[in-house]
Image (cartoon, helix red, strand yellow):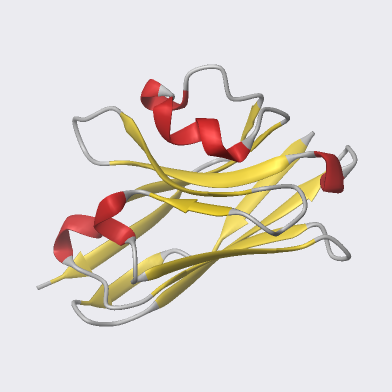
Length: 127
């Protein structure tokens, strides 16, 4: 399995960005998908996850109401729409895929045990 993330960049506080991740090399619809982020000098942390069926979504508390995760099983992609961005959202964002249920992801320190990771994409929010 390979994951290719894109869409990061520099944006002012209050702005929006949309991250996208393309999945290849496996059966996308059997994987739960999600995003983690890593702030400079800190461990990776959970941001959002979506079940394989696209029915259930989960978010870290600080992004609830601002970020939306979605997936397109026909195009093998998962997206993270980020609105009302804040300087504290500045981080490297990582796409992830795992066969374990999406509801468990927030309880995984640093994403420990996640099956597959994409290369990070940098998001910088200026104040």
